Image 1 (tube, rainbow, N blue to C red):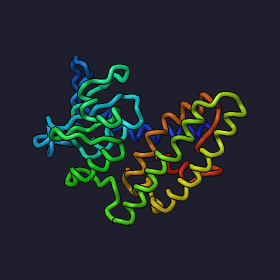
Image 2 (cartoon, rainbow, N blue to C red):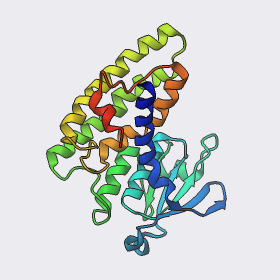
Image 3 (cartoon, helix red, strand yellow):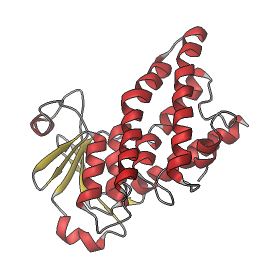
Length: 244
């Protein structure tokens, strides 16, 4: 049923953001809204990294959610600096002078930009904490990076077209390529998950983070345009995989 499909999307999305909600935060007033976030099981690495990890972002951003999930998967204590995008901070402009956009991770005074690049950095920097986000096998890592790039470079632009489409004809025209992309991701899920719950197998992995952060906006698009994106008849494995 449509309600059942929506519930699966919500359960997967809620599972991904659960790591953001089970954290301790202290807010301070400044140009940024600053919260120090330390997940409960991060005691082993807090002493080493308690004050040298900062993330510049905006809480509604799907792209900012990616490194936030990765940091919490790895149990890294960090400061979250909320950016006001209508008035970008000097720190953001200095830290990302090329694109001048969020997210930006600052670690030991060095800036890392672009959400998927940040997730990979987090995975490779904190190898002794939490599960590996990228597969250990070089081929599997390459495949995961390929599909994550596909999501950002190919699927997201057409999904964005659907999200802003107005009128029945425009929505119908925008919907088909979105479905086609999800069918490709269905095949990728079958190959990458090896029959497990996630693209990454038993644990949330790189592609899960890349795609999962859009699920909330998929729900919004469904309500606005009265369309169902995760159709069990067309993409059964991904639809079931979202029901974690």
